[in-house]
Image 1 (spheres, rainbow, N blue to C red):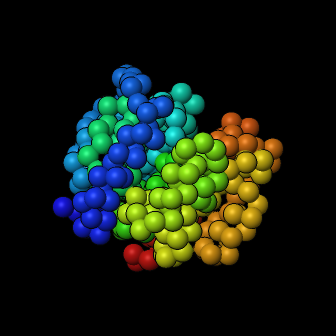
Image 2 (cartoon, one colour):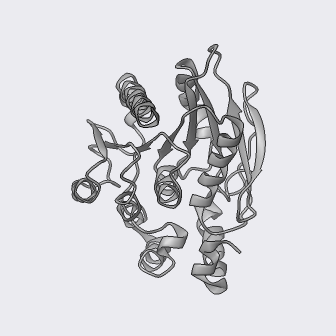
Amino acid sequence: MSRNEQATGKFGVAVSKLFIRVMFRQVQGWKREVPGRAAGFVETAIDGSKLEGAVLLSNTAKAKGVVLLCHPFLKYGMHYFFENSLDQSFLDQGYHVVTFNFKGFGRSTIGGHAFADDVLAIARKIAREYPDLPIHLVGCSFGGYHLSHALARDASHFTSAVLDSVPVSVRSYFTRGPLRLAMRWISSSRLAVPTGTCAIDHSLKDVNHLPIAYFYGLNDRFIPDSSVQKLSVDCKSLHMVSFEQCRHLENHKKHRDRYFQEIFAFFAHAESQKRLESA
């Protein structure tokens, strides 16, 4: 039994798993093979979840690093990045790309209740296979939410993290219907931290040694100005980047050139900072 299960208790774990299955009903069942340019894999997380993933290798002679992409809450899962050609932009800049389906998406199974465990399982795989390369995280919306909580548990593998279109609280995203009531309950209960439903500033405020950028659209209804202000106060080390006239998940669509310029400049700064610390 993992530390999270011990802290939550068997009843809490059972409730959390049931909650995931109900919440994910709208995205379950959609499956697609990884693109021909990618190599598929299955990684077993500490909670027993079988995580479907894909690796794409840069064509450059010497890779700069590895980018781990964490997908939003859409039925397409990791294929979101392929559909929007986001993986190619990283490959062109000399980074290997690794992405995966969180538990409950695609062919990934539900073995536990904490999505942060999924991020750390894939990160450990990358660290084993590419021990000499820096690892950068990019998480969109749901994926960024849970990688934030993963960083609070173990940030040792990473060189930087970029959070794109990530609501500060789950309450900002789930605003109607039964899921709203369920999220309000679970995010206020003792299950909030183990299940990763607490606000991201709860986790990020203690991750001061890792460079983290926060990208948000100024018209994103899931990220109100008040939550941005609170996040910037609670997590003063965050690099805040706003994008005009962008709704949820539109930053890379409406400002693609600037979006990647910001990311690669941030990666380069984080890599140089880590080299200085290691010297």
